[in-house]
Image (cartoon, rainbow, N blue to C red; front, side, top):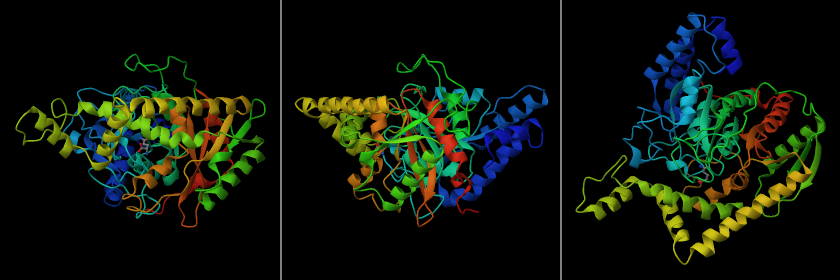
Length: 486
Ligand code: GLN
């Protein structure tokens, strides 16, 4: 699909109407969905209505913003008023939110055209989108492989041109990993930059919403539209939002020399050699563009994964206590008393991975184990944050692979949760520290599968991340390659 700026130009020059653009996206969805399964629901009528509104505004001579008339996919864990929001769980099968999440409200106000709600791992727990209770999404580059997770539906939809851009959520890597596996741009902003109001909570101290796009500029435009203070989210930051897209410059360091740190601990054992080669080449390219490259040690980076798998399930066990058959979604028809209603509802409503997390989290928060697990994990979280703080005294931006491998085969890791968890080794530490990160395409493996480069920024320096990502993107041609789909 054309870039946001290109579509915008076509709209204001009246070369194409918003309805035509929406119809094109909906047709593509219809053709590709039998193969991809990216969407849990396609909102045809609402999309065409939103597009007509944009066309009316253009016809009336009104000025429209960049996102007006742009087809967008929304991960199905963000509440959309009057439109089912399932979190890919049986327990929310019939849940129709009575309110709108802040991000989708902002997009509506900007005139964006939502074409549907995208598939995910149930409650965003997973790395392959195979934990969805409804369908398995395929990777557009190879239909036998996973798109990554948990926002796999959004990543596959954008990579295949079913929509122009999409939103995902990232608790431990769920935007960046699928972006890497599907060869698109995915950004997790600083914790608190984007409101979580209306995002169904997984692990509240880690969750952030962010953009998927086929270019850095499109991602920057989308983040600019959803970021900003929201009194409905108590962790929302009250800061000025820069115009991320406006300041993009193909020159890597328009204002002085840029220092980039390579995280030593992310290389070596466990890293696929083809990924290592591509990322090394990308770092050389950044050097060619004028960056000063340093090797940086983050010795406690490797504790990120075990720390995350204490903290995230603990928070999830508390957040998911609300699904008891009383207020939301599914309730078992077969219960003798209140207690059996609770237990039978939850036994039938949640999938295996969600139950595993609830049990883990309940255990680590229980009296007697709290100090040994949860409290200890919180202390290690602080140490991981300190590693980043020390690194950022020496450099402006950190770089490493987004994932240790390229997309794996569907079914390859479903029997072994630990091997699945390892996919997030390099993305999780950022969530623990609240830092922004972006994954951008940096090559292909021997099977033609995309490889992702992760850039990590200082708190609230999304502008700098976009700038480095943009300069790299403009000096390479990876983003011009499209998956072989018809
Ligand atoms: N794969 C990680 C998990 O299963 C991260 C998920 C996410 O970022 N939502 O928890």
